Length: 267
Image (cartoon, rainbow, N blue to C red; front, side):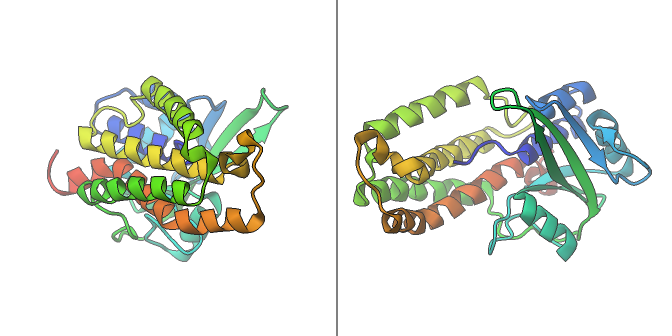
């Protein structure tokens, strides 16, 4: 499932701060969310990790214009622009933020401690140089919206064709639970984002919910006592891979819509 990435929160609320639409404290609070703390390490001019409020203010003073998201996986460097060291770290983390205007990138290191149900999470964002170049394979919002509509149909058809139990009532229940979560967090993109970006992100996450149903324990089949073989699970994963790729591309496009609009002169 395409859950909200920490890089998405950092980019969305960091962009709202850069636009002067929220205060530094509000941005830092929204970015941290349920985590215990977020700090930024290796920031130019700082000898030790600093808090988000100071880090975002320092980046703005250095000339940061906007924040972009990268969500790379093996074989798909989505949103990255180099150099190799940064790309490798971003790939290992599965996400990163690129700061436009200062040629820097931030990669999260997540530290968890404590028993299940009471996990203490600390995040350290490592600051590294990046190459100022167009990000890899990021569509425009319009392209992402069109691709997602087709991806949603494909995901539903694949679930039905592969006889995934989640294609029926279980899928609908999971989607309703997703909609309830989405309704409680409609400010995920922060002030300053166009409405279309929110629509694209919500649709991408809905497609991700369908993928999660298929890829969960038994693809939902366990609820009905059906056995699912390893080959069947592999077939589902293979069939849904292009759909998942489309959803991730759209998710990045939504988070990057602020910078896209900025570069077009829309702000």
